[in-house]
Length: 468
Ligand SMILES: CC(C)[C@H](C(=O)O)[C@@H](O)C(=O)O
Ligand code: SF4
Image 1 (cartoon, helix red, strand yellow):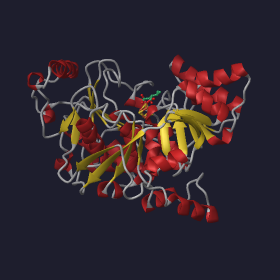
Image 2 (tube, rainbow, N blue to C red; image 1 turned 90 degrees about the horizontal axis):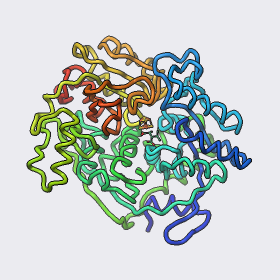
Image 3 (tube, rainbow, N blue to C red; image 1 turned 60 degrees about the horizontal axis):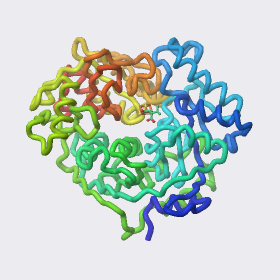
């Protein structure tokens, strides 16, 4: 009896290194401009080639402008950003790594591009020099973020030494109420177990609520696993997974597809397999969630209030809460639905996919963003953008007064020119609300796409259930 994690791990061990460590074979390697320059430089210095270029896929996403792409990398205004993208382009050309250029319709955030291309497949190991690589676990892939020296190791050898994680089942029971989705589940989970609650573990999401989710929602869930401190997130593949992947450019075809699906059906935790930890989350009564502080675990229902430092169990927590509230410009006990927003950001590898844009558009259709609120809608990839436009979602956003941009990480971490000004408050569909994450002094409230759209209309944090 094995867990899904154990099956994925065991099938990729090249050499057991003892003590729970092993050298793993890496099937797929996503590469972006931020964490790859020193890795390529290392190869260069050692005079080594990339061992299996076809196992890699590179795309620039963090530093790309979201307004104008006409000039490609050369048109990037900020010198550091331009250098990073140009360096990636030089490296992929030199080492023969497949690359999706800036002006290619498939360009986008790595974690959206990989699945979209069928590069991410069940049963594979997927790595990327990026913490949110856990996203790909939604397909039943063993997917985790790595550091730059590990990027170099994978490029050179197609293997990586890893410590085996402990297993943690998160059983998501019940039927999600209207207006409540995967983002709320992820935020609630992090609120419950804490941002270090999953440390050293691989989270496997199971239960009827997960089975009922589409692939995009499952990706949102696995994407946020990392914010619970976990190494990775996993969902066992099923018919939903196979239907979503079939026909993708890099997915197997014909008889090879049928063989693959047969193999993939075995990728599930056996009944009775033991997990090191388990957590039960009943979502039947879950309300839409919103963060009030500067960590993803600082989260409450939109119907709730900011906490009171005086009511915390210990002095350290009281001080942390007080500091977070001061940074966020929130009074102890202030109702969360009271907070006026300046900016709304809809996008990122957490919530920049088609289902997310549909969810936001459903709220914004026939409505207007509140006066003075800037709403940025940034599709996660060029293909998401094209699909959204084919459905007329861009019209919905534009008529509501939103900005409709080119794909990239954008205001998720403000490495490009999309950023908050000091003191600005933002309802954001991204995954991190750390101090300064969206721009120095900026205040981030993490929410679902529907909640972000509701905040845009209300001009303050608002309950999406009032807008359904
Ligand atoms: C730039 C990159 C290394 C970073 C990460 O690893 O997650 C970024 O994507 C983020 O979300 O903070
Ligand atoms: S969208 Fe945000 S979280 Fe995702 S890879 Fe880009 S910066 Fe990181």
